[in-house]
Image 1 (cartoon, rainbow, N blue to C red):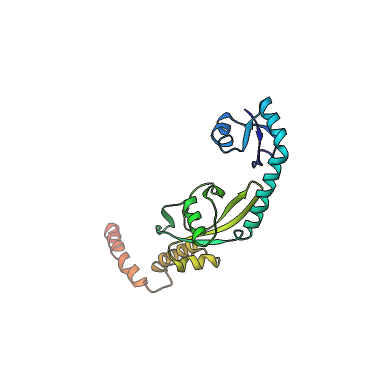
Image 2: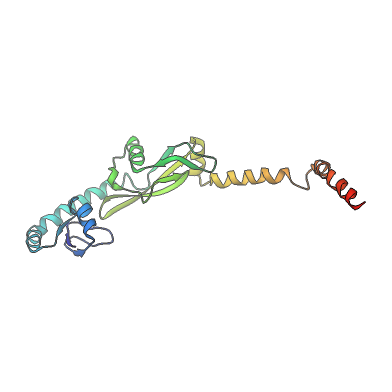
Length: 202
């Protein structure tokens, strides 16, 4: 289906471009959100007649978005969530969670402006895009942790899960370290085996 774009749409085109899209994408997204018009003769005439006004409105919205972006760009929010020992969340962090965290921090962002390709399902620091306008995007940091202390470590660049894994691994190897002193225990455990072997040999 051919449509006339009423605003810039990422990976599609700019205002006034006539582009071909899948009918479902046009019907479910572009047309109801007034991002495009069906590309028929009547709509082309309407668009051309109103092009100057459409572009002026877009420029005004873009200027507002650029001004607002200064208070959003580089912002960091922390979300404390319960998670398993492997760092997998019980549930996930959604667009709504991020929007609410930003609003609690005094930053007004609409849910539909937060671009989350997929829900966040593990602890860690994530970079999330916020599209304040089709031509104005900024990045924020979403720090998901199990405690404020863990969030602080992650904010400092510490990979909490890697550290936990290393500690677990160290704990595991320590118990069986041949240079440590549990040699006696190992010998005691191994003692019955040679005895059985000797009987077999005899």
